[in-house]
Amino acid sequence: MQEGEKGNTYRYEFESWGEFLDYLKQPHKTNSRCSDSHGGSLGAVWSGTKDFDDALKLATEGWQEGCDKIKKLTAGFVDKLASLIEVQEPVYDVEGSGFDVALVLEGVPEHWVRFETDYREGAGRIVKIRLAASCSGGTDTSVVFARGAVMAALVELLELAGHRCEVYVNPVDASSESPRVESSSKLNISTSVLFKAADQPLDMARLAFAYCNGATLRRFGFYLMEIAPPKYAKLADAGYSYAADSPASAADADLYLGVANHWKDTQWANPETARAWILARLKELGVALTDED
Image (cartoon, rainbow, N blue to C red):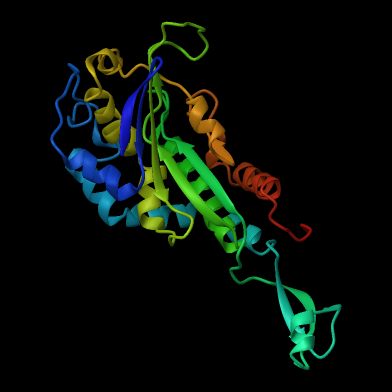
């Protein structure tokens, strides 16, 4: 785990989801007058969980209810998109479109090779996926859930296609001033958590929490703001300030889904829009697809 100030930004970086949760469980000095991360004044629906401990429990054990909801929300288009994914596998036989020289020299009769489309996992490229959990205060939890569900579905499809995903979540990215304001005195807090390394299996129940539950920001992210050095903890005092994308995080990802705003992120719950977005991202990331009907 690393944390520190660079320029006008205070940044937290965690090398695993477990390391992040262990950090949250440790006692830390609070430098903010606000304590919404642990309080119940904002309500369990808006905050994602009834309290901080409940959030830690779900983050550790997995959010099965959320996982089931993801499947229900995305089933209509995930199954269809999965059927479009092509994985080319080599098949060795006594005839084919090419041959393996090493097998010829070894005298193996089945030295000819042809490639057939299969749907099993294969070894593909490593793809860095990152979601910024920050959103404006007016962003409904249904939007938070839907955008996270679409990203989780994309991760699942990429791994089905044989790519190995390195999955990141930013619990909070905030700025003392609006992202639309250019200012050299602007203070920022940014975060990065490696949820899944490329060689680790995908735990959808825990990803459901990390990507889809409002508590990732409104419990955990807010807490990181409250315990930041006093200079930066003032961002929590100011109503937890403005959701603002981290340029460093955006640059360090093959696919980055930035902060959400209630006036522009209502499209995620629309199955056709979500399906089109995932399909476009799969193509951008080089996943071979069959022609759509």
